[in-house]
Every structure is written in structure tokens, then in C-alpha cells.
Image 1 (tube, rainbow, N blue to C red):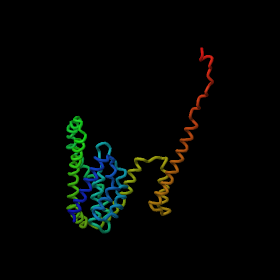
Image 2: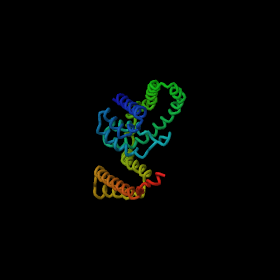
Image 3: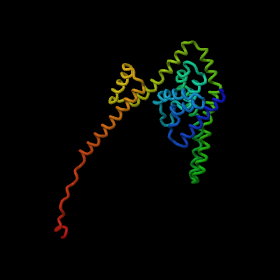
Image 4: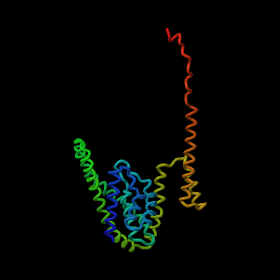
Length: 271
């Protein structure tokens, strides 16, 4: 089962990476909220994939690649974390998988960075293909190379899921109870850490009040995350329409009046 699961996880990685980067160029399919349910689907536990996808997306939401610097690979981190939670099962497996996702993603990002030098060496070849003005040949070779570039990381994912999950579980079983409690607590905190990273990038005094309002809604009134999200969506739409109305009125008030049409001086025009 582990070898089959490793093959399926590696296949998900190859297909999602190749389609997202080299066919769609959106870089949206690689997000945990998409790839985690796909991993859960192929492993036979869609529910766990959906739950972990939402949690992992919150963790990786504030982590973005700037230029060639990739702090953590959310794609491979999500796949291996979901595979661990599903294959191991039991209490605490989801929280432990969440705690390990960031570490796994960082390691995989380092492996991918080491391979970038090899792919960068093909720049002269791409320039020659472009100079030949044969777009069909350029596209076919680009697809082939795109699939080949995913193989090193896919091999690591296959080996990690096929042989590493059981070894990791044996190692964790040998750990004291307080270690497992710490991992479970850390996994529960990772979502808050992800939101904290995101807030540090978009924090503004204009929206600070909504942060405290959301805190009161969840802690004092006991609303669920879905309830708070619905209220926040309503407030966001209200602000959008208010600002839109203000801008439209301001634009109409500051517009220059149309110049008055003076009667033509036919006598002057005649001479």
C-alpha cells in the first residue's frame, strides 16, 4: 500500500506542477487548498484532504516566492503531510502532519533550488529554438522538459511516502508522550502562525479595528470561522460600495464644466 501511495502522490505532484507552471501559468493549482484534496482523493480519504487543505493553505498563505527565492515548497509539503495523516491515521495524525508540512516544504525547496542550475543551463538551447521560428517544436520540447524537471522532486516524494512514513511513525512512537503532545500543539498553532505572517505583510492602521472585532466575535460570542467570514464578507462589500459611491460623487463634483458654446460670428468668419 505504501509503494502504491508513494506512486500516486508522485503522480499528483508531476501532473499538478506541469499543468500549473507550463500549461496554465497561473501558479494557483499548486496551492495546498487544491492539491491536498487531490492527494486525499487518490489515497481514498477526501475528507482528510479537504480539512488539511484548508489548514495548510492558512499556514502557507503568507509565504510567497520573491524572485528565485522559494522559502518553502507548499506543493510537496502539502502532499507529504496529507499522505502521512492518511496513512498513519489515528488521533493526532492530522496535527502532526501540519507541524511537519513547513519543514518538509523547506527541505523540498532546497532540493528544487539545487536543480535550478541545471535547468538554467538550457537557456541557450531555448534561444536557438526560438530563433528557428518553429513554435510547435518549441512547445513540444518545452512540455517534455517540464515533465523531466519534476522528476527529482517526484522521486523524493515517492521515496518519502513509500518508505519514510512508516519509519517516521516508528520514530514518533518511540518518542516520549510529551514530544507527541508538543507536535500536536505545534500543528494546531501553525494556522495562527500562517495568518500572523500574512498580517505582517498587509497590516494597516485602517483595518486594525477589524482584527479585534473578529477576535471578540470568536472568543466572546463563540462564532465559528464560517460565521465570522460571512460577516467580514458583508462588511467588505459595504466598504466597496461606499468607496465606489464616494469616488463617483467626487469625480462628478470635480469635473470641469463644459465650455459654453458662443454664437458664431458669421460676419467675422465671412471676412
